[in-house]
Length: 267
Image (cartoon, rainbow, N blue to C red; front, side):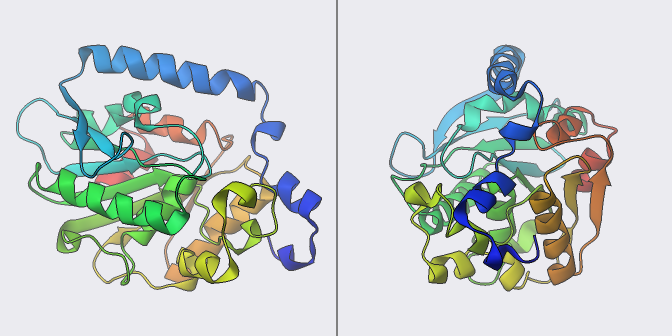
């Protein structure tokens, strides 16, 4: 939010503490995990495909019925410190129903690696998934994942398949990392001002070509509404505000092939 430079650590920590302001927040992760496991049990999928060394450097690829219309790549959130690709499998459902293959990307987590390292991992993951599926590539990610997919269409970090990227839809992205530097979570992230600036999409420029739409929930913390609006302004992209949605349920629209979110991803 504007004026973050004048906020102390406690205030900034609170501004980005999503779970503290969502009723039943602790119930969401186990629910996601159960729904994801049930989805994988019946999906046409290739699981744990390696794109680099290390146990987290893998992705799951879900296949639609028939020949794919292209590839959707989803990158999960968790402040670069939490969750894995297998927690989100069911969110492939909406794009699959529209005929797209969907790659759910895993990546190593902080504090083992820095955010710039995660960016490089996601670049390799996008290329590895793209090598398996022809056609246009459509990127989307939630929260920290929104930052990571935005980085994929910036000039200093594009994957080799960049010319195939048709759309990028960051969902509730952390697009300006500078407010994270004073926060308690930075003990794990280890951001310095230079890396925070370099990894902030709001301070860079997208490559020409991809259609960009930012999504965010109307009931999110003011800091996340500010982040989404800041990215929209910086990149000249529309911002879709989902009424009645907070940080944890704004992605539920990915389950519905007729939702505005899935329509923007697959447009």
